[in-house]
Each structure stands twice: as C-alpha cells, then as structure tokens.
Image 1 (tube, protein in one colour):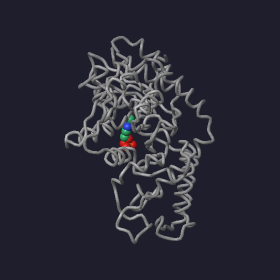
Image 2: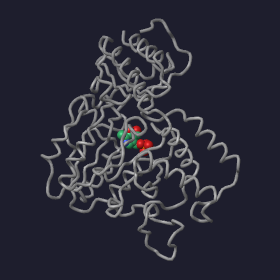
Image 3: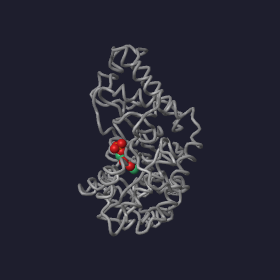
Image 4: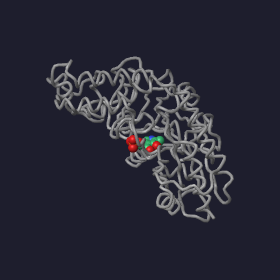
Length: 388
Ligand SMILES: Cc1ncc(COP(=O)(O)O)c(C=O)c1O
C-alpha cells in the first residue's frame, strides 16, 4: 500500500452504476453520424437509409455477442429496467408463481412485488448466503405446479457475487420453467449467452458494454417470444392496416421512434468488445479486485462483504464499519481524496438483508478497465486513514 499519496485527479470507482467512458470506436461512430446532420425515422422510409443500417448493424453485433440465432431476436429498449418490466408484465398470467433470488435489484424485485400486490402472481425470493451466493438446489424445494418463471441476476450489484445461472436454469428447465436473466452487472465482463436453458437475456448498454446511457434491450428465443405479450404497443412502421401489434420480431416488442444515436453507440461498443480479448480484460479486473480485497481485509475495523474471492465475483466490493457511517465515508473519500464510490442500499435492499447490512447499507467500490493498481492503493490508503 502506498502511504502518504494524495490523488489530485478524481478516481472513478462506481463502474457498477455506469461506465464513465466509451471506446474510440463509439466516439467516431457518433461524431460521423452527428456530422452528417441528416435524420430519418427507422422503418418509416426506404430501408437502406443510414438509420435502417444502424439498427441492423447493432442487431447483428448484439446477436453475435449474446449468441442469439438471428438478428431479429435482438430487441432494443431504453435500458434493462424497461426490458425486465416488458418481460415480466408480458409473460406472467393470473395465478402464476415466480421464483427469484434474495439479491435482486429493484428492476426485478419491484415489478414482481407490484404484480404480487395486484393479486396477479405469487413470488418467492429464494434465500442466498450472507456472501450472496446461491444454491440452485433451493429451486427444487420451492417449485409448485403453478411455478412459471425463474428470474435471476447474473451478478449482485451489492456484493459482486456471481450467481450460478447456468446450473439454476438447467434445473429450472427440468421442471419446464421459463427463464430470464438480468445481466446488468455482467454483460461485457463475464461471459453469458442465450442458450438452450435461457429463454430471455436482458441487458443494459451503459455499464460493462460501455455504450450510452438510455440504451439496452433483450435477446430471446423465438419460442419465448411467442409466450410474451407485447407490454408496450404502438407504431412500428409495419402492418399499418392492422390495429393489432405485429406478431413478428422485432416489431412485436419495438414500438415508437428508436433511439438511433444510443443504438449506434451500442453497435460500436459491442463491435469493439467482439474484437477484444475479453478473457484478458476479465483477468485484469480480477487482479485489481484481488488487490483491493487483500488490502481492505487488513484495515482494522473494516468489514468486507461478499465472497472475498475475486474469481467468484465481479469487480464490485462492498465494505462497512460498525463505527463509521458509509455515507460519511463516501463523502470524505470524494471531498478529501477525489474518489467516487457509492453508498447506501444500491436499489437492492434484499441483498443487504442477506449480508446483514440492512438498513444502514454499505460503501461500494466498483472497478473497471481504467482502474489502475495505483488507484486501488490510493483508495486503500484513503480508507485506512479515514477509519483511524
Ligand atoms: C443487477 C441490476 N439490474 C438492473 C439494473 C438497472 O439498470 P438500468 O438502470 O440500466 O435500467 C441495475 C443497475 O444498477 C443492476 O445493477
């Protein structure tokens, strides 16, 4: 640990919330598009015009990245919160029972709670261990004849713990459940694809994929698409004689004017990821996380939550202290050391119940491709100083 070092530059350690930067390829694509200063509306003109090409380019990139068999199986939304709502409200029917986990973000937990309060569904939030880990065998014990869906996050945004989605979905499929994964914390960081056991994979653009905010979507199998009603309906520029929403993809789930600029940023960002060595990037983040975990574990009075093992987590680490308020620590880290973290409950109170950090919450550090070993040492030194 470097002692006596004070950073003069802000150090961003809130990647779990949003990526602060995008790649050169994204900048170039956006600048070229804006410099043309000519726009049309996708699907309301002759295809072949620039916007139609942007949508197609993005669909192909995302289909490749997430292993969707066809480009039309990629649906764009304004982010994963909207994607998850579209699936949950469009899929679930009165009497359905849903299984989910105890580390879900509000983007899953709140729509499910609302559906339950309206008397439409019943939900079980399956237990996770204190470190956020989840045992897929719990699924079996909670399945009922009316269980329809297993929805789970791939990575906890509070504890960083990676959940066993593949094993859980394989088990769920033995019982004929519909499966939906929230990849907000892992897409672009931990490999995950649409496979035989995954019906829908929801993603957000502005975190690990490093596209603009207000972008996201979902990829789904054709069979899954048949089971989901469109939750948002409206103009698609197709089948306009019909007052009913088209059944074909992607129009079934894409109404209204698309966010072309955002979708272009997604296309370029994902094309960039497709040519990068993601395993090497993941290893770099693991090393950074390990460095932080090793140092934080030695700071007297500091509690480190999660698995404590970089290979079982994303680059997210929550800490707390019985004698220090996490909001006060976050403020001092920013004001005195220029270190940007996030404190509180991180829109996932259930995860804090698992970790024993509810309602006070935690101070969360999350790292990304630009985080250096020096940044980690600076943060550790600052934390240690503030704790004394
Ligand atoms: C696990 C998880 N799911 C969903 C979301 C919601 O993402 P967005 O705000 O991009 O819709 C987040 C955001 O932090 C998250 O961490």
